[in-house]
Length: 604
Image (cartoon, rainbow, N blue to C red):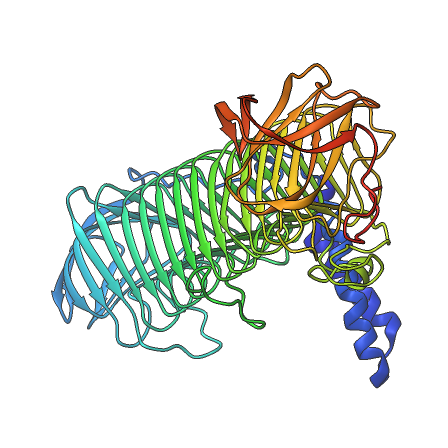
């Protein structure tokens, strides 16, 4: 059993124990809630963020297989408006209610103002919808109240519609236009339009498997809901939901409550979360598009969750294409987030990607085109892949959402402990690590920010940092070392942080007498007159930190403006440059920090 497994059960047990110990006094209630919150957060961040999709899914409940269409009774049901006709064994017609009581395959066509009920305990029933239109004014259009599995097969070339009642009692067991108390599978080459007027569109109290088909769902609450899991292997799914787009909500069994998307085209528009899983969200293929809470231009509500993809334990993006535009976090996990190959584009009214524990990037591409904080996690690691971040606050923030240290020392570039814009002197158990890949940041707040430590051992990091002196291109509370790769961090001079003197790779930090304007070509030249770095500024810039294998500690370097930038560029850092008639604006010694830079924090 994995440690990640089992945050749900672990947190529940610890919260109950905390409540019992706290007693029943009025004063204990607040303390119990606070302790429970801290306990939940602590449990979540123990999740192993290195797990790939196969490992996560192997530890979860296995997905059911679609039932055989060749077993049991075979028959047809002809819907005739307010009733139906059928000669098949296992079919009973009582007015506008059609009840199926035996395992088998039933082809259904026609129109019905009524309901189809499947009451076949421990049986697998397949309904082939071939031009069926079912509308119920009292309850679900199709409800499998007793069945091991309901298979809804959409006949090739057919168009089918289901719609339910406008409301349900709060304690109603059946509460979706298409409902199954057992497993539910949707397959076939036809079309299905579902309108959940009273609550959910499609729901299973066990697992929901979408194998194929063109499915359009409009729901008052959740679009697709599987208590144990929702698995989408293929098909074209379009959901418009007043609640969550796709949801799995079994909180009692830690091997359930997950959502997995392996293929197909999935488009979700939701007032709540696009995808919401109590445990895991795993995407290995397909095209997923999410618009949640009105998009990133809408300020997140304090009460309602409107995240794009949300997981309670781990979120793995291993393949496919994912595009998210959300009011709240675009990609969120209470535990860990692992990127291993998907192409992800995110826009958020809050965090682009948020993990309470580890956020690890091992491949693929991540493009945060708009966010308040770009990427936030207790431990951020980039090993491989391409990452671009645009943020109105910090680009990367190594911090914990419920950490007392963070609350005390780093609330959106506040003053405590470190001067204007500083993260503070408290060093928390947080980290930002880059071992490879490419990371480009455009931030109005701190560019690369860690409330703990930071290290770069490989890859390329380019930070187009803030213009205001209240923040810095780099802000690290603890040790900051570089032993490989390339770093260029440009920004204001009010809060300058450079790598530590114990770094194994040379670095320089140049604070300029006056800022250079956006669009300026800045060249760093060694003592032999060779250009070692060429950078074109994207903003007004007064400090540049640079490190690469071309920098030797103790050697002097000159900084120039002008000349020509040549070759390919990564975030403004060019492959090469020609000095030409450039103007020298500064001289620095590698390994020596500037003297304060407008009275900001001293580099570590």
